[in-house]
Length: 185
Image (tube, rainbow, N blue to C red; front, side, top):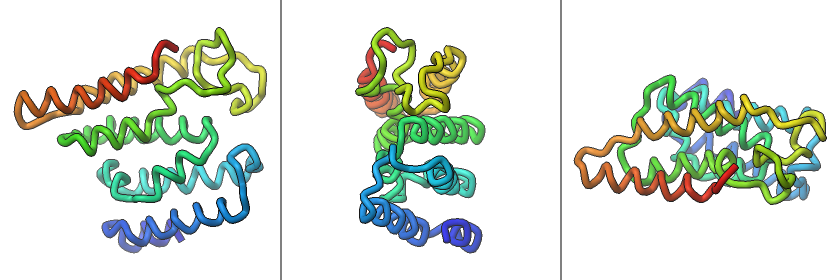
């Protein structure tokens, strides 16, 4: 249904948001916690979340989908990171600028999995990901992945542009406040 909605007419967000709301309700009704998903289900949910990013010419359009953020937040850390990396990559590849506080705050909120420490992170680990979300639990964290994620976040800041100096400062402050919540990795 999501692919059909995006293929037929991706501009109005309501049909896409309705599909996301339906999926959210089904997961909640069946009391499926993120860890209870089998790999096939997790992959389908990841594909569902990546669909709008691939379909929209402007990746900021996903901020108009009221159910996108809550559905993303209910997923595993691994899925959230995959979507955050895909979102940042889409924004950077398309050179999409963020010009207001809602856009900046929305994007950094969707990418919070790249900055916030996971509550179940292992002490002394170089990343904030949980080993239970790794393909093979107990495998070491990949420093290259961490560097790539942090590099994408650093490049994102260069696409924040306000029409004047005061607005620019306000937008950068929103980004700084959100990104600084992550602490040291």
